[in-house]
Image 1: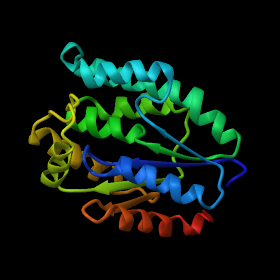
Image 2: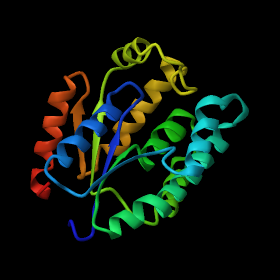
Image 3: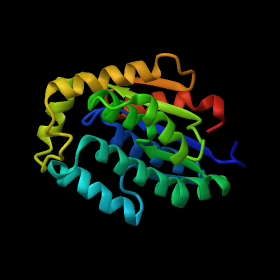
Amino acid sequence: MKKNGFLISIEGIDGSGKTLLSQNLYKALKEKNLDILLTREPGDTTLGKKLRYIMHEEKETVCDMAEYLLMATDRAQHFEQVIVPNLKRGKIIISDRMGDSSIAYQGYGRGLNTSMIERVNQWAMQNIKPNVTFYVKIDIETAMNRIFERKEKLTSFEQEKTEFWQKVMHGYEQIFKNRTNVVTLDGTKTPEAVCKQVLKALTPYNL
């Protein structure tokens, strides 16, 4: 597996703790002297940074369909420039969000055609799928409290109403219910406990 690289995606709603988990997992695997890369969607390429700004700061100028197509543009660039080359180098890649986010957010959350999103995702991702996906599940109230406790400027997504988040969470449940490569985590646990669970789940992969 190391020869061909290994792709890990981490999913969850805003405030779930997935970004902190991504960082903690990166540090833990780095301590094992593994060849590892931490990346994210959207925004980990030069083009992606510009697209991330538009989607997070200028949402009022972007319709729902355009929002997804911007995500797909970022994803295509991300795979071409970051994911594919580093998998070929045999790296272990941790990605904070990937294609499933668009199915949950723009598909279930915005009400766009999920089948179309899946097809475009497959194209943008060059038919590559994560070896394993970790879904950080959490209740909406706890997630929103965490976001507000940061006392940072809210992104356009973080400003969404409860109804939107209910749809997104339902989307994740539907997306992952029949997947065999998905590990669901309790996002209300401490960051250390969540990371420990992930490391245990990665044991069969010799990571």
